[in-house]
Length: 155
Length: 295
Image 1 (cartoon, rainbow over the protein chains, first blue to last red):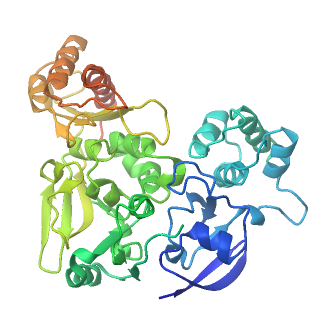
Image 2 (cartoon, rainbow over the protein chains, first blue to last red; image 1 turned 30 degrees about the vertical axis):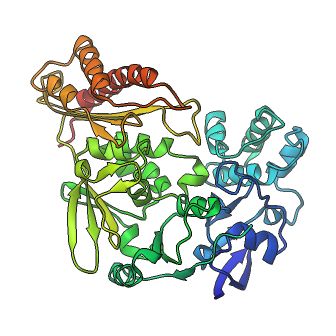
Image 3 (cartoon, rainbow over the protein chains, first blue to last red; image 1 turned 180 degrees about the vertical axis):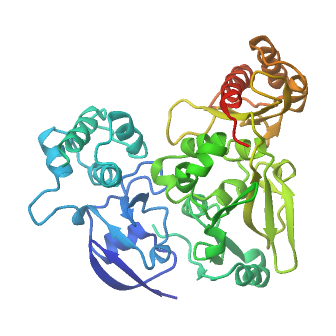
């Protein structure tokens, strides 16, 4: 039987009817059509499905959508600002931190979760913050450089 | 690919949750962070008819420092333990355990209670909590009972919990002055890792630089359950700490461990590492004990 949940996704309050066995990832991608959030391993190992729940990055494949009732969510679609790309997104582009792009939404949300609370994070903090996000292309160096660049540019 | 279907329940109090678990019986699984249950449902190893969420029960999410006891609700996230200043100051080994569990993403969901009730031999929170002499409170519709963590685990995936019981909280007493503790997890990488071996050590001194009054050494991932190295602990009591003493204690702990060979490491390597990690954590615990004057 479907349950009604109220969630705020990228500042937009929504009322949704979801099946209890739907993960948050499935609801984001399939019910809301927000396919920027990627489905990877589905068991919490890869971080491709990372979204922010109440400002904290989590694996959306491990959370039931019903558990998100009443919470504020940010997906990659909600990161861009009215002025254009978020500084983190711009840094990923400028520093060549994207290759295939599959890990990118998750990397950016983990980085955003870090920098929102610690705008001047250093390299060690950055490496730790993205340690739940796997990238099979870049070797991480350019991703770390991009986040470090965004961190150094923060006001 | 959807998860198996189930009915979802969201009790608002522990009493209500206990009643539900009693009524639904073996058809029900509690869910807190979901980092274990959802994975098992995804893999098809579990398909409960009913899932009872503990996440909306406020009393299970509390962290309370009263008198000389820190009480942690079972639904405290691992991230909240890692970020707590009370834990960092008073229980550094627990902070170290919380910081090495899973990944930052997992720590934001995973809970203290979940890391205990799943009873994995390599879990990161049992060794530090046992090193502090922690105990758990178990609740059911019939009774409430306190079980020391030393007696809680029975084997891989098995605890003394009865089917309809819910783990409500963990209590640890604030260690005496001149005590110190440390946890070290050995893995092949720093995140999303299951320990090859881990050790938590606790030492209490009579005074800075003085003799050892009490000690606890807990080994993870080297036996079917997290285990006290009782023989190793005994060697420490009444002695003046020294490197050579710690080496001897490490060797004893290694002999007491019961590791297996698997793809993460051989039993022989694990035993050697128990010795190294025991010594390492004792050195760190001693340093903290010597600088900890908190009454």
